[in-house]
Image (cartoon, rainbow, N blue to C red; front, side, top):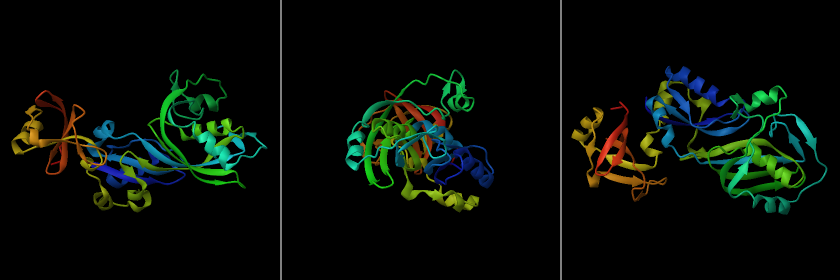
Length: 300
């Protein structure tokens, strides 16, 4: 099998648990996901099956979330699974929240939660946290494309915020930082990833609905459908050359660029994806008027 799955991860299991279940269904080891979701979080989890794991580096890393934030308290994990370490008496208004959200736009610096898998001096941060050790956590630069208020409940002091962001952004940190700016504390009570690159929640499949190899075959996504970049449509002689790792000379009418909406635009990157019979066959690098072979997927 070769392709991607758009899995909707349920609450209460890890992203690795999803992979483990799929391995049992497919009876293969070569499966991986493209971005971890915390156990309490739900939503889009792109999964690579077979040799498509070699395409992870070419997938769009941008994400979009619906984050439910509870104000009035702070937890040690910045989410509902942690222990409350501080409470606040002051209330906030919708206007207060809208004003602060303006600060979460563009490139920002954020400090990851102490309960995270980021490594410092060879150890994961949560290992320091569990032993009560102090550690200097360096701020990281991330990009916030949008942080829009979906709803705010004045009585419960909770809000749902839609956040579009770059890879490596911690939504738990955003919840914590919003609470700090408002001097009322804040932590996540729910988190749903609604988009990961070109994978959206509308097209996702529930993990519990995948019970056989046949189920997977019906929903397996051809990589060419969800990757943007240069596409080179090979003829039969070129396919044979690429299969042997031999470079090929570019035919201008065979090379096009497709953006994230698969609109044809100008060529902007040296990486090119070999296509044969509407399926992705490999990856190459453009050098002047030739394409050198970088990877080949034996899927035909």
